[in-house]
Length: 172
Image (cartoon, rainbow, N blue to C red):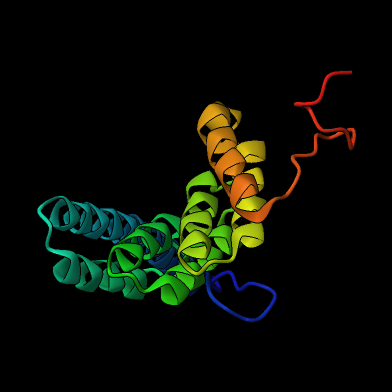
């Protein structure tokens, strides 16, 4: 009796081995992705620890390694941006905050980071816009953001305008 052959002339034994190898490769890739994500989070935690210890340069190096390991990690970019802010490297910090936002548009922390960097660069309108984005994403930040926006408005002489176009501080 002749062995069964599939539509491409492949025997059942070879076909089952090929399918098994594909499944094995997919499982290995899945596990390596999880290990990589865990490794990145571990590096982020190490970087945060270094920041808390005041080792800013060491923290930046560790967080750069996290970004190198996974350039698609919004948390790694956000934390690196924060560390760069502490080094007073505002332009580089903004770059990483923007990358974090590109990866996660709901990253309120990255918008706050941009605002802080923009304040240090004297670009108050950009800072204000970033704070408004952060507040829209995370309304719980409202009071803190509002007080900072009020401060910015006092520095620029800008009027605070509500969603309807009216100044919410003026009596109706």
